[in-house]
Image (cartoon, rainbow, N blue to C red):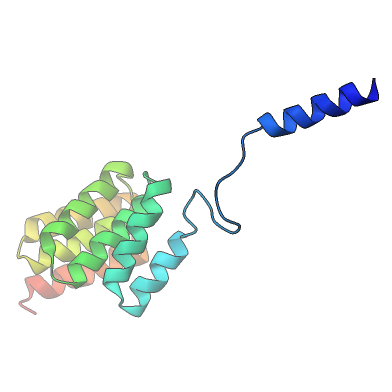
Length: 147
């Protein structure tokens, strides 16, 4: 009887699925949104975009990741890609204060003051006079004053 149980156990072990991944590898990304932010803070925008896209493979609804992508593209001078990323961030989270602030800054940069003021109004509605609202308000005021 003992041999039958042992044989059944061995057969079950052999039939079990075996992982083909090497030790230490993973099926999911090890990138965090903090990693993306660190690249942005260092000014390594290409790497920030790459890491944000990698992060999005596992976190496709991350407004933060799309916001960092938009910011990075804007800093690199690619306003079209920045706009696309900010639109995606705001489609995921219409109240994302960072995306509204940075999108407003992009609109100032391209001379679309009406859109910048719309983002400022949205920030005021979302968070009152939070830091992001104050930053954009200052930039809108300077742009309107010709500076």
